[in-house]
Length: 136
Image (cartoon, rainbow, N blue to C red):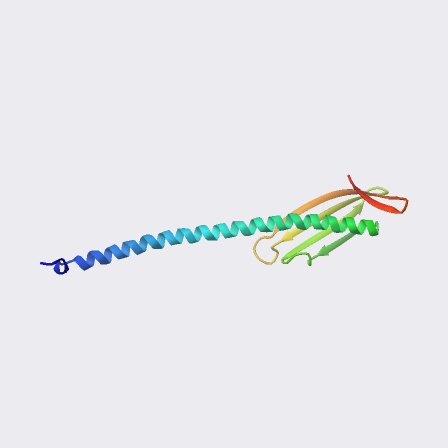
């Protein structure tokens, strides 16, 4: 008898092929799950960093407005970055002192948003026509 004519030989090859395909499917499934988890982690970290920078931008916007016009204000901005909002609140604490709070939310339309809050205190001085803000 030649190896081709041995009964059950084709059945063993078929079972081996099914086992190999099953193992490959499991490996590819694990790799896919890992890739999706990494993608979500990177997206979350990106949102966190973007929120941190938007808070800084909100404080800088407040500082610029305080240099131009020293009055308390509150403003919501949605045009600084896509899929984000920034709320800036400036309050007057003393005669020439101001407290700034900036809250940024990133990812407001998809998934849970990332929120960050930043605070700053400024003292505004006007000496000899030069207006300055000093961080406290």
